[in-house]
Image 1 (cartoon, rainbow, N blue to C red):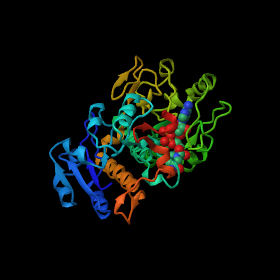
Image 2 (image 1 turned 60 degrees about the vertical axis):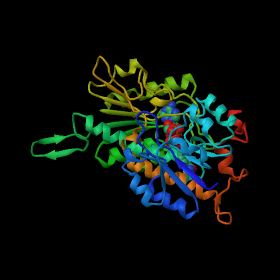
Image 3 (image 1 turned 180 degrees about the vertical axis):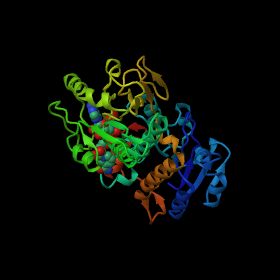
Image 4 (image 1 turned 60 degrees about the horizontal axis):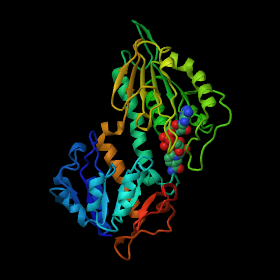
Length: 374
Ligand code: NAD
């Protein structure tokens, strides 16, 4: 595989690009030819001229896709585009495979080798290719900045001759990659932070960032081999909701990031619970795209309850920082390609026995090959 096509994103609100000019150079050093669709990097502030200077060709439209051995995108391809892929081409992008059965079927039918970036194993070796982590990290940071901009008060404690202002109080629910970065950012800005997660290992990580871990006894919880949370039973979820009432009521900002990989996110704040929050409290639901942690939240929409609580459905906050988000996403993809680079053949060669590939390759040779989607 020697030719690479970088598509311009078409999803509304998507501002990132899958490959930045700096990584074009890396791919060129591997002997790959890179073609970038004109304007692909514009919103992330990477111009066609920068791509050309890095050694890429610019294509006026997506027609060049049909000649590419490797197609790079951020978002999943549109169903109607799949037929244009070259047989045997490698497609690297998010695929949202748990919700996109027809797309996965179409990729198999078109004989595309489709990698779902969501499925890259969470192992030490694959860490440098892990887009879920790189993008969640930025989204977690961005959530706190958004909240700081919207609050009617400041985050840090201030002792002045005019009196003392107490720090803003944040409650972060779900302390994975996004949640831990939200905690760290809120702490850096001087807020008082509490957090909760069902995975017991997280308690120590939360404390090490200087935040308070809210202890709730919901019984047996745990995590999968990949480090993901296990789904709670309805009874456990109810216990969790009751255990969070106090922390929610004390907060000026509640940020929810609680997800269960491959499943709908749990509803952790019901409409009834929102009634117990202070007027002006900001509730940022970062799990909104996978069903939402807050009852009634919708992607990219804000609703205000009768008691003045603002619920903001935060979809893909990393798109607010497209330059850095693209840099990290691009580095993840370049690391993936480098992993499969064969110096002898001066090409990317997919080794079907490779553990990383086995984890994330969904379709190959006209079939769905990933056991989870067969
Ligand atoms: P995620 O986005 O799937 O979930 C976010 C958080 O929500 C998780 O911490 C999860 O435990 C939590 N959660 C789920 N249900 C909850 C509930 N009812 N209440 C409160 N919290 C709930 O997870 P993620 O952030 O992508 O990653 C989770 C973990 O995976 C990381 O913390 C890490 O341990 C591991 N990880 C490992 C690697 C690696 O080894 N390469 C890379 C990334 C992540």
